[in-house]
Image: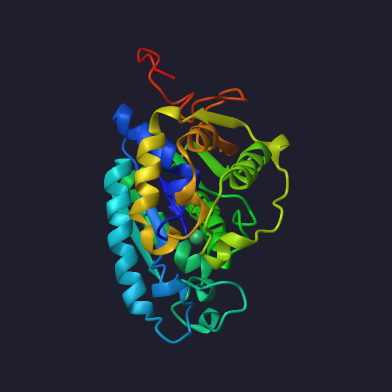
Length: 274
Ligand SMILES: [Zn+2]
């Protein structure tokens, strides 16, 4: 079970893992906490600007999320039902339905019900800064830990992170290819902290790159005009060759580093093709 904040968050960090699970017949549940309603409207208009309809953005993004899940072979999509908070400091933060306004115990209870229903062996979410510092990502992290405490069902809990080499590969690709970056958010990015010493788990996602690319295209309303859709084949192969995770909780006793999230959970008679 993966707990993500917005429609589209599932693809770039965890799309390869999801597709590999589909290949192996492993059931996956994607929990998307918010409706993504503060994402871009047409022509990259932001929430509060003329031409931005949160309801319309949410409805477009739900269709995109469903298409992405189809491509990545997600078994079950669950929506936690919160409104997108928007970036920190936005007016939308004050929306009473915004995820950043949620009572965390109540939100964790919603997630706990899904955990009780699906009985996941593994929970995956972001690290404590949410990966991006976005308030909805931070809350996804917090409620996943709380819900895991409440249910005590998952045997392993992971944070998905971007390695320093991933960030460097993206930077190099952006420099080496002539890109027409239109999406405002893609123009400037603060340097991300190097957390490589915390990474426990690197999974090989080379067989999933084409699906990951198609899933990015499924989220066209948000990713068009970004560098992600302009990477050439060689860069995609390089950037998406692996996904990296920090194992934060474990009841299996499996040793780290590991190259398979399900180490310690697979039947000894089943030979994995890792
Ligand atoms: Zn997000």
